[in-house]
Image 1: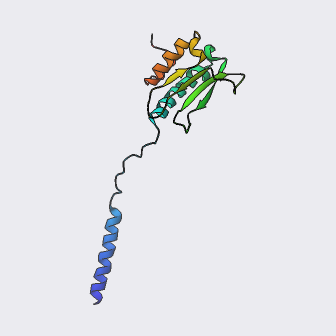
Image 2: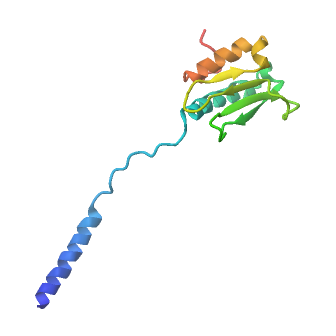
Image 3: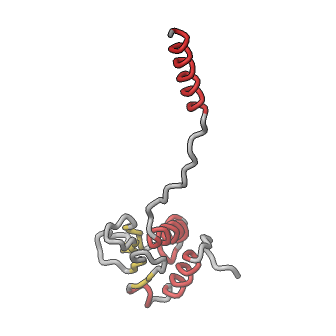
Length: 136
């Protein structure tokens, strides 16, 4: 009877050893959970900050950026507000809604001479080109 118990123990040990050598199951990448609107707005907001604010572009010197990308309303956005009045009325709103990657731009700055540049910059960034200037 002893050899049977010994064989069973050896067989169990071999089974455990073999199981531990198995490769771990392949897992599919976990989606980031970011909506299309948030992905689009992150891309545009990073470029806008780099090109308009951080570069100290003279056309945007009088403004500062209020980032609201972590909106729980499904409308990630950023605002340009007066540099000396951070809580002031937004002069430019750039936002996307829901599961759409379409970016909307509106506000009083769009009626100023810089409005055409804002529109072309946003369109270029939304298309995936993060450069600060349009190609000549």
